[in-house]
Image (cartoon, rainbow, N blue to C red; front, top):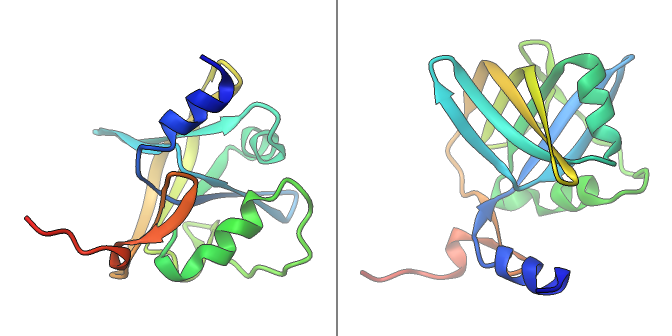
Length: 158
């Protein structure tokens, strides 16, 4: 199978959209990620998969902190900003949760301390111990088949 076929198959799995953020030397860095999941309830652990060439990866490894921000359906533009590999001209304001940068309006903000890194292929799995959480009710931004969607796009009937 070729890379394009593999990407198409992986795109058939519907995911939420997150922005992973960290702070290093007083500057906030972030990236869009959809490879995120919970790992353990005791202790409370999550993992996110980050490309091994990501600038954000080196900042998280150095700072040992990060946040996962689960985006709402109205935050598609933030997803695009943080998905860009180029320095953005957009100014993005951050709030704080347990002294870690988080995105206002995210339906879940998860503050983490880095506890492990696992190199797997061309990505690194970052394991974070959750130090604080904030949630709010709103529709999530979802990603399927290479496009953004919201739960309101289609009504499912049982």
